[in-house]
Image (cartoon, rainbow, N blue to C red; front, side):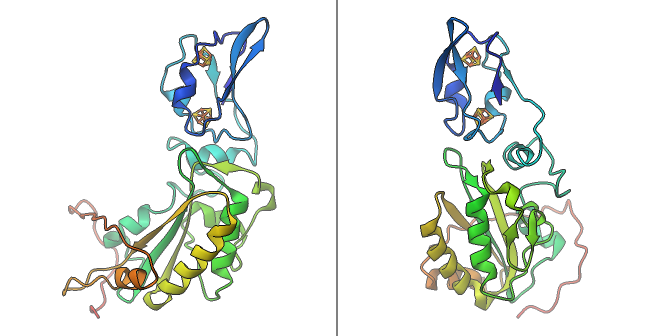
Length: 248
Ligand code: SF4
Ligand code: SF4
C-alpha cells in the first residue's frame, strides 16, 4: 500500500486500521504532514484501503512485482494465488474433509498457521518450520496448498530463496500424517518456534469415531497441547467424491 503525498492531508485515520502497524509515522512532505507506509512491514492486506476511511482517496495499491506479489495473495482475501494457482489460504480442504476425504481413519490433517495480525510472518520463518518438519522424514506436504506451491523442494520444505524477506499476514503449512506421528510433529514445531520471530498455532483435524473418540486430540494432549475443538457441519451442499473405508 502506498500514500499519494500530493493528496494526503495527514488526518491519521488510516493508521488505526493497519493490521501491521505499518503506518506508524507521519512525515513532513511538501510542507505538510503526510502518512507514510513502511513498505518492509506492510503485507498488502488492503484493509486500510477497503475501510474507505481516507477522506481524500490518498491510499492506493500499486501492482506488485514478484516476489512482493505474494504479500497480497497471502494477506488479502480478495486476491487469488496466481503464482501457485491454489485458491484460499490452505485449510479449507481440511475443514471440508467430509467431501474431499483427504484424510481417513488412522490419519490426521495437520497444519501450522504462522503469523497473525500485528505480527505477520516472514517466509524465512515459514521455511524454518517447514524444513524442521520435513527433516523428520516421510512427511508429504499438502500439494493443494499455496505454501507448498512455493517450495522449490517439497521433500525438504526448502522455499524459493527470493521469498525469504517477504512478509505475509499468515501462511499455513499443511500435511496429512498417520495419527501416531502427531506427537513428534508437535514436539519439533514447539522446538523450532523458539527460533522464529512470529507466533504460530496448530490445526489438527481427524475423523470422529462412532464412540466419539478423536484420537488426534488425545495424542495432542499427550504432547502437551490442549485442543480447543471447533465443529464444522456438512449441511449437504457438497457431495462426497470418495468411498469411505470401514471405521477403525
Ligand atoms: S495494506 Fe495492510 S499492512 Fe499495508 S498499510 Fe494497509 S492495513 Fe497496513
Ligand atoms: S486517511 Fe488518507 S489523508 Fe488521512 S493520513 Fe491516511 S492517507 Fe493521509
